[in-house]
Structure formats: C-alpha cells, structure tokens
Length: 332
Image 1 (tube, rainbow, N blue to C red):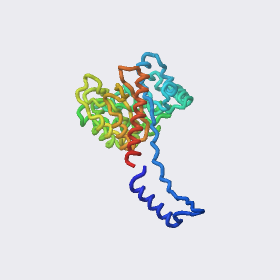
Image 2: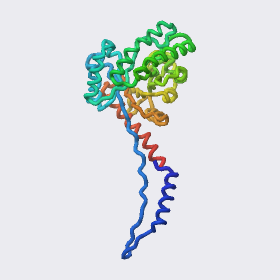
Image 3: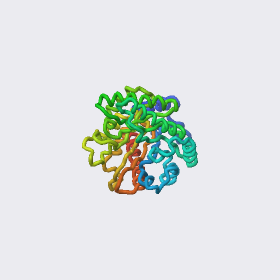
Image 4: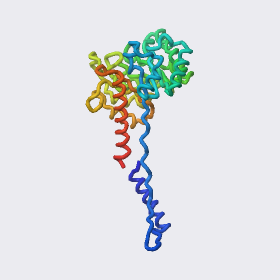
C-alpha cells in the first residue's frame, strides 16, 4: 500500500539520487531520463474457505451422500480444500481409532485439510449439577481424541446449562476449564459457537473465556445464530423473539476466534445474502486481524444445498475482493 508518507519518502530518495548521479547523460543531443520505480501495492491476502458438513445435512441424513466421503465431496464438487465435520454423522464410530485413521487417509488422498469437529448432544458443559457436568465433560473426550486422529485443530462445543446467569457462568467456567485441560494434552482447542440462549450473548461468553483463562479456549463466531430466547439460536426460527446484534457479537467473539462460520440462508438477484451483510462481516474480520479459514454453512430452504454452497462461496469471494481492494487502492 502506497501511503502519502511512503510517497514523499520515495520522492526524497529519488531526488537525492538524481542530484548525486547527474540529471542526464548526453550523446549526440540525445538524453536518457532516470526514473524511480514505485513499489507495487501489497497483494490481496488469500481467502481461505472451508466447508461445514452441516451445509449438506439433508443429503447426509437422507443417505444420499456417504459421510465417509465428505472430504472428497468438498474437493471434487466444490473445489474446497478444508472441511469442518459434524459429530452427528459419526456417532457409531466416535471411539473407533481405525475409523478416524482411515478418514485422515481419505482426506489426505484428495488434498483436503481437516479443521474441526462440531460436537452436539453430549451433555451440558454448564450443568449446575457437578456430577452431570463432569459426565458431560467426559462425554466430549472421545471427540477430542477423534479430532487429534483427524489432524484437526479444534472441536466446537455448546455453552448450554441451567440456573441463573451467575450459576451458569460459574458452571461453564468450571466445565469448559476441565475440558480444555484434557484437550490441551492432545493439542486441541475448545471453541464455543453462538448457538442460542446465553451462548449468543457475546459479552457473557467472552467473560467466561477470560475467567477460564485457558490458551486453548476460544470461539467459532457464526454469522447467523444470535437468538437469545431459543436453544440452537437461529434467527430464522419463528420462535426467536430476542436477538443479539449479530455484528456486535461477531466483533466481540473475534479476538478469541479460531474459525469463522459464514451462515447463509437466501440470496437476492445480485447474489447477496438477504439477511446478513457479508461485506460488513468480512470488514469485521479484516479489522480484527483474522486470517484463518471462513467456513461455508448454508442453511437455506428455498434452493438446493449444492446451489446454496456455491452461492455462498461466490459471495465470500466477491465480498473479500471488495473489502480488500477498497483498502489497497482507494486509500492510495
């Protein structure tokens, strides 16, 4: 990027060089002019896109696609080279080390990187009952182990529980802390995604993370799940009556983010998401210095899953180019 300061600095250098070396060299009334080559603008950083398995949940649940082939599907059908798994499609193989070693080989064979496993339905890590909370923590161990075998960096968990705000806060700090300590031994991160109720309150969750104070404890901010009165948190749910500001929540989660989930539902005639401002979301990521993967998670119902994935990918590419080109060239 060429700023006014760097331009003046380069001009000063070139002027000094000209005065020392002479302005022209003359032969037979011809002259050669010395010019200074300006540095090229910084290139736009690469956009790293991953595919969340939930984007194809209807096809997987209907057995139209084989969950074992997810990495190959991402690469061959969508030209995406990183994936995020959903534990619900692999529950029968959760503790099968051979299965996960085979899954790693499958992904390596097609050049796909495994990023994380999204874990649901293993108990509430914020349960107010000590024994139930401990059981929930231990239920997650097998997914930490699976993530390690796959070569993932994280598992995504839910910050659900019961009791008052104060009681839930204390229980989550304890439960998440216990799980983080176990996961640290395997070099795996524990990530909270906004998934409804208190998990979709950005200030509450970041306070939990700060209080737990574990280096492998972070967030997976999702563009779409900011419903405060419904579990799972989709703002598209007709039961959602109270919504946390999505842009504020993503910005609050971002300093702890080890992933970035691009939720999408529906697109207009220009290819823009009708509910979420993707340009603003990319700007938030840029301003926060986030340089990790952005995971496509299509949940729309008015278009096919393949079309939704491709539309989301195209929009991410368009928004990324616009945000970074504005920064690199308009401010020159």
